[in-house]
Image (cartoon, rainbow, N blue to C red):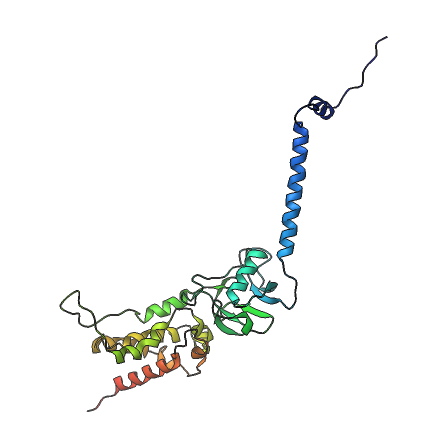
Length: 297
């Protein structure tokens, strides 16, 4: 009578075969699986530890969200983020933290982060501001962040700036002298007094905050707007351009949708991040237009 021995499983045979040597392939696979699970749990705990709880050392952001290309996000809404507050933190710093730690789809423009490029103009706590220049400590909590009003929203805090650029281009924003020096290497000299006169107008960074704050621009899509008129001022008042070119510029800005549409509300001057006296420049161009049209005979 033959006796049948119990069969070993493949795993048992594998362990037995390697009992006196290196770990079996099965042991190695199981250990790798346990390690991956442990690493994943450690990563999850690290992420949870980085998320600050609402409290005295955090600031609450209410951020406008809208994405026309994603189903379920086509209705405008506000998302809430709590970010850790640090001294010197700007609105842009807070948005970057929220994007990097909470929602990578949060969309906004920024570049230089030094109030030079003008790309991060937003509507913060009810006023047009540069996000990179605005200190969180100067704002009431929660901080409400929206895209610039009176502009089409592309996604979240990004608006379509094409109309603004078209209005700037309409005033021909470039230097064009009537006469050039005989020597091609000679400079186009400008007096100190004239430079001081146009100095503030040269600070425009094309952020669009003034245009967004202007009620006239909101109701009249053809109005040149304060930024474009300020750019026209910068060149019209430059003594190097000559009478003929200034005459051409005055004809551009005194059209129906030019300087005469301004109602002197000073809203553009109030929100300008570079402190340009936009309203004053518009009024001075009005005076120049009147003098240009006076005829004595």
